[in-house]
View 1 (tube, rainbow, N blue to C red):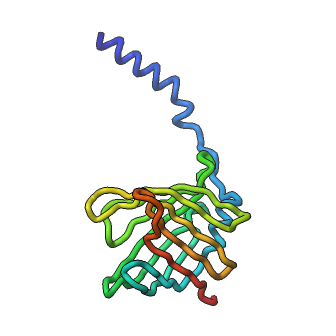
View 2: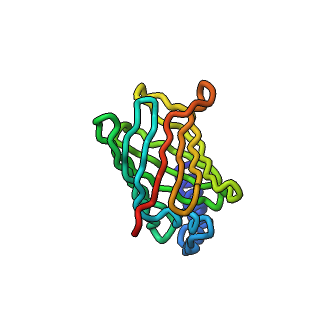
View 3: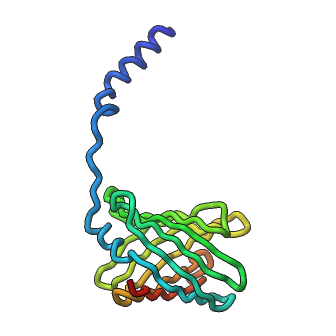
Length: 175
């Protein structure tokens, strides 16, 4: 019985050996990644939420072979320092943008995915935002490209009806 098991495993390994050792095709950025590249630079942020207004800075850089937009956000929320990091890319298999966000107010990442509507100049992502109680809230993240140097970002909670959690306006700094 044991010998039969070992022979079965060996045959499975031989059958898949070509797939395991085959060179992976080179992954190259596509037009969707060039859309992400448009955000590169440093942006001043004005944040509006139910807790009041605050200021911050958002830095974007396309990295990792031009496949991921790396994001670094720093702000002050009512005297409390906040810092967040994100990574956004385009997944051609899903035909969607994908994003991972981590920050100084949570030990769980926010994972989201969505699409870009070129006619409306709007990226719409859906995800689960970690909450302080350990639960997740379904959210919609929307970024509108007002023009090349101005954006508006909103987070809407979707769990108990549609309500705006926060709004951030971004203005690109001159290079």
